[in-house]
Amino acid sequence: MVYAIDISTIDFVPKKFTDIATFLKIILPLTMIGSALIFLVMALFGGFTWLTAGGNPENLAKAQKTFVSAIVGLVIVVFAFILTKMIGYILNVQIL
Image (cartoon, rainbow, N blue to C red; front, top):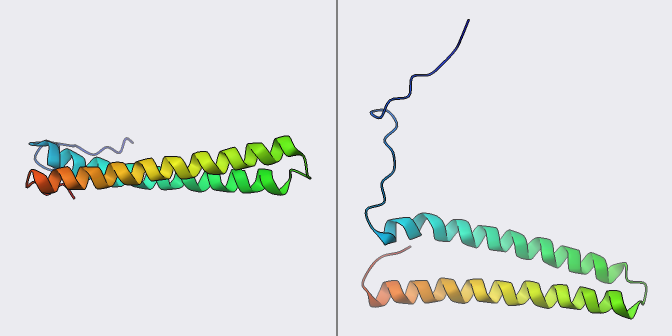
C-alpha cells in the first residue's frame, strides 16, 4: 500500500516575491537568528578555550581573538540591520 498526498497549486500556492521588501521580510530575521547562533557558538568556544588554556599565552591569545572576532561580527550584523531599516525608512518602504 502506498500513501501519498496530491500536492496541487491550489492547495499550496508558491510564494512569489513581488518586491525586494517582501524578500527582505523573510531573509533578514533568518539572518539575524543565524548570526546570533554563530555569535553564541563562537563566544562559548572562546570561553572554553580561555578556561582550558592553563596559563598558556598562545591559547589565551587565541581565546581573546575568538571573542573579538565574535563581537566584531555581531556588531557588523547589527549595523547592517540598522542600515537596512534606515534605507527602508528613507525610501518609505516597510521592510520589517
